[in-house]
Length: 209
View 1 (spheres, helix red, strand yellow):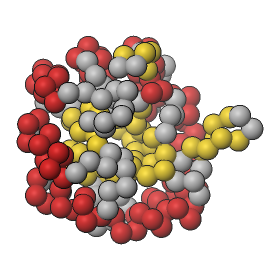
View 2 (cartoon, helix red, strand yellow):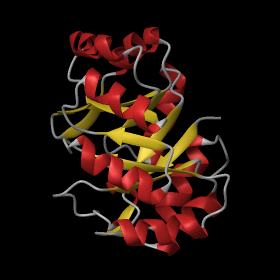
View 3 (cartoon, one colour):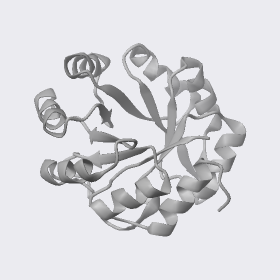
View 4 (cartoon, one colour):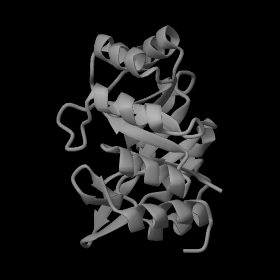
């Protein structure tokens, strides 16, 4: 059974629904230009009301360490995701200073791109991979890039606008640790779709939809 991370949560009802459906991680965006950016105050209020078995993750992109540290301390959070060009040294500094686990996002366009992750191997705890590409107007996925990345022996979350219908192919062809959903389970900006979240989580957990 694959794990699930629902990201871009911006209100308590969506976070609670995701939790009730069985998500393992809930992601809150602190990315400046993100349409799902959330305030520290609201994130803290949501997290304080969620059960302890769901793991909150604070998501950043090219933020300075001081700002990241401020959020970590205010939320009392133990998991951080970096979606930008953060260096291995930056990731290690945050990890060591704040005793947090690090998720690092990469967009892979080819198998060759896998090698950019090499310096991060001994620093991060999870990889978040977008291996999608467009072909003749349709979204396709580079499964070979996932297979190559699996050689790093780091838990991998598949990201990049995947839907519940895409999960089975990934599980048939690769062995990801989990799947991440954000815009693919949205109804409106800052509002998740009840049915889409449920279907996504059930597909990842191998339950009948």
